[in-house]
Structures are given as C-alpha cells and as structure tokens.
Length: 187
Image (cartoon, rainbow, N blue to C red; front, side, top):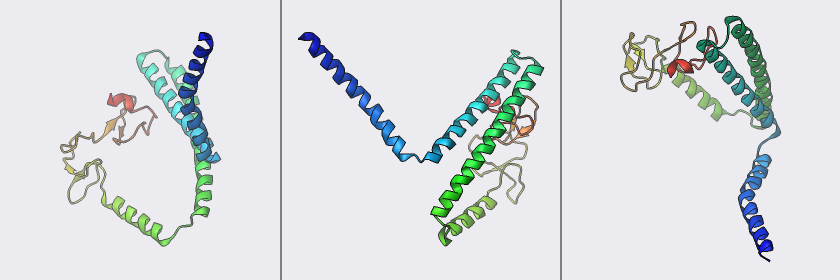
C-alpha cells in the first residue's frame, strides 16, 4: 500500500514538473514558421563560428598555437563563416520576398522609410566634421577630436585592434582588417 502511494506521488511530481516543458515545446513549435528554423540554425552556426574564431585568437595570444596553425585554422573558420553568411543572406532574401508579397509596400511605409533616412543623415558619427565638430556615436553630443571617450555618456569613441592595431568603430565586434575579435581588447 505504501509503495503504491509513493509511486503515485512520484508520478504526480514528475507530471507537474514536466508539463511546462512539454506545453512550451508544442506551443513554440506551432508558432514558428518553417523558414525560421533554417534561419535560426544558420544564425546559431554563425555565432558558434565567431566564437571559435575568437577562441582561436585568444589561444594564439596566449601562445597555445603556432603562427602557421593559427593562420590555417583561422582561414578555415573564415571560409566557413563566409559560407554561413551567404546562406543567411539567401534565406533572408527568400523570407523577405515572401513577406513583401504578403504585405505590399504602401505610402505609409515609404513615408516612414524617408523619415528614417532623414534622421540617419542628420546623425553624425565619430570623426565626421560638421558645424558642431566631432559628435559622439552614442549620445550625439559634441566631443573634442582628440578625445578617446565621450565626456557626457562615457562611450568609447574608437576601438583599436589588439592584433594589427587598426582603428575601428566603437560598435564593431571584429577588426575590418584582420578579423580579430575587438571584444577581447575591451576587457
């Protein structure tokens, strides 16, 4: 008798704990279109490849990899990343054409796009000279041309690649010259 009551309690506990997991999986599976699975898979592959490149660069900086091994592995990961990015572009273009045929552009969306374009033209990035001088990329306040940080919001006004020393934008995650991760140089 005690064994049966114990088994019923265990079964009740397992069903109470497991129900949200089963319910959430079926609800999310029904709400995500099939195309999004492919895109989300490609996006996760892209992030994994970027992480592998960052890890590879960190191993090289610590001296765990020789220069030749680092170059060969980095080249392989970069080729993989390029292939993934091309696949993401193809899937995104296919999804966009499906969406644009389902929701044709109208005058209202064109008006919004033109307003966004005007706002982007007014916003001056770091290094762009205007009547107010150099502007902070984050808050838009004027900063001295020799400043490394914004005096108003504290944002870094540039980032330097730890591998090749190239100057980059503060929002860049990877160096445009050598592809090294700029996250490592920010701490």
